[in-house]
Length: 329
Ligand SMILES: [Zn+2]
Image (cartoon, rainbow, N blue to C red; front, side):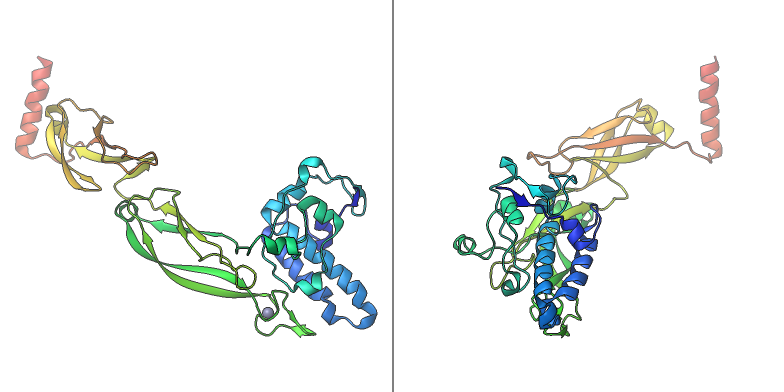
């Protein structure tokens, strides 16, 4: 079935590489301009049509999955052109949150339906059970010790919830919604106590069930994922699940060997430095690294640095002098 191609970017008046924010801003502006309630009977029909197109364009471009699917069609298409959907483009169905009054929408175009499947508000959608709100992702910064031992953190998550007063359109009757100031979104900062389990690593995702975006009506909220970002540590460099740290030896310690105290995540450990250790020699403390994704623990490597003393006592100077003479003989 040939349908007529819709240029969603043109509808919203944004470039093809527009950011999420630009799309949202363009949508808000247009939705306010063409909200049918703001137009008198003469222009109402046109406004309704425009409003429908704007909502459809936003529905696609504000959803990364749908947008990328739409983008795969390429830019060779012009609005209104006959479009024959490819077989592989059909049959993927999305049922996402309805952010605005379904009564105003009056369904989507055939083009939309051929790409994304049936309308969201139909009985088929309802039969699939409640839709969930969007999952959200945020970052949490942890020190290496916190990640290793686990901790409880207070995090502030800012997010916007769709304004219920105006169903997210920013318009109420013939005026801007006073509740949200016409933005359609109420900003909200939540403070959450988050228990960080021991052994998380860089990039771990901690799931907070039900702390994500709101779904339509009273349906289940999405989840919030906190992605772990481990802060740089003054003593340890993190290399995957291995740790690296440095010890500074005096020349005599390096030449003769010694027992030295080295910091580890489990506290100080005594390490035997073998005689004849060079600058850059790495000593391995097996299993003293971070928990690895595959189970077990990485290792800690202790890199040897040597510090040449700047000041010597009289006696030390004498001994170095003897050492030098010994070699010249
Ligand atoms: Zn509002």
